[in-house]
Length: 161
Image (cartoon, rainbow, N blue to C red; front, side, top):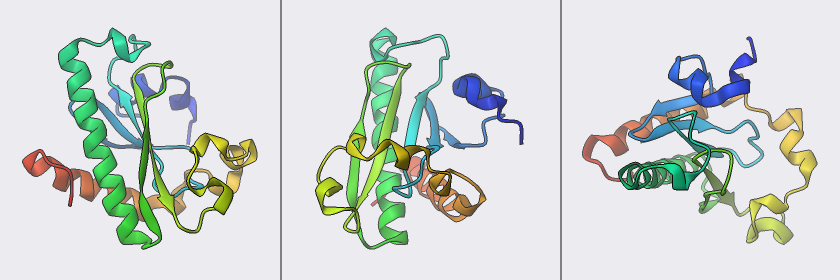
């Protein structure tokens, strides 16, 4: 598959060419992250490729984006707890640059003890780049389960239970 979609993930999502997209939500795109060393790691990408910071969004769009973050976090937690009972919940991060983006990381009891209750950013860089953990066909079941959870959460506007 052509990897050109990685050059501009939002524009490629808008064109329907980003294979990491799970669902289009109200203010962005729910996508599976490239690195899956914590299975279920997902992102919410803002839907305007010209916006570089969360603060550049209108108040209405910021509120909608945060509602989408809540929806994605609920779907990730529900899915990951179902697929792996060792899932203890999710961490959510809204970095300050790179466009409106939120990261949702499921956390697991099987994580190394020295990292389990700390920021995911403390994982060694090798984990982030290891091809073993790269998003691929082996994640199709996870992708389907997350899409179903997102669909359920959108039926009544609430996060999955």
